[in-house]
Image 1 (cartoon, rainbow, N blue to C red):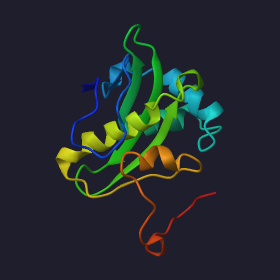
Image 2 (image 1 turned 180 degrees about the horizontal axis):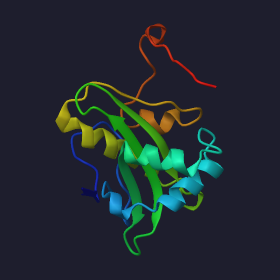
Image 3 (image 1 turned 30 degrees about the vertical axis):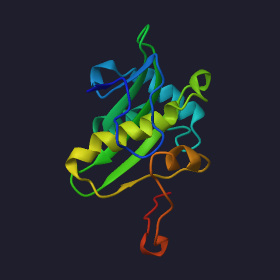
Image 4 (image 1 turned 45 degrees about the vertical axis):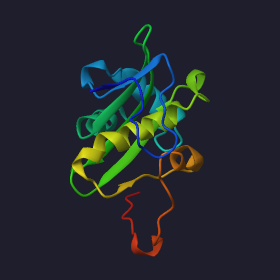
Amino acid sequence: MTITQASAGRPQGGDLPDGYEISTDPARLDVDLIHRWLSQDAYWALGRSREKQDLAVAGSINFGLYERADGAQVGYARVITDRATFAWLCDVYVAPAARGRGLGTALAAAVRDHLAPFGVPRILLATEDAHAVYARVGFAPLLKPERWMAHLTP
């Protein structure tokens, strides 16, 4: 699947700027670049091993963000889902030189729109500082956070 324009009838935000496209084709992913971005520049994945990153890619639906003119990858996101009841959006990353153009919001919208035909009732994510990016495409704080728990392995 390749996306060159946002879907109509969706909540505000998520329009993909001209000159970019989003694809779920795994053959287009620059896995070396993705690993470098995440393991060296993303606060949530600093130091992630290449082996761990490769496993994460293999177990996910991956979204690459590309410049249409030359095909260069400028962003990435992945979603873990059963395609029925639950999805986890994670590893959303836009290269520093491409930030400030709404590309992160477009990636989140692409994930949301990709999952819509399956009727997945909840897509969750965690963010330290990009709440506004995700709010533009319908994400909101948990209504009842007291119901949620986590098992964290050191």
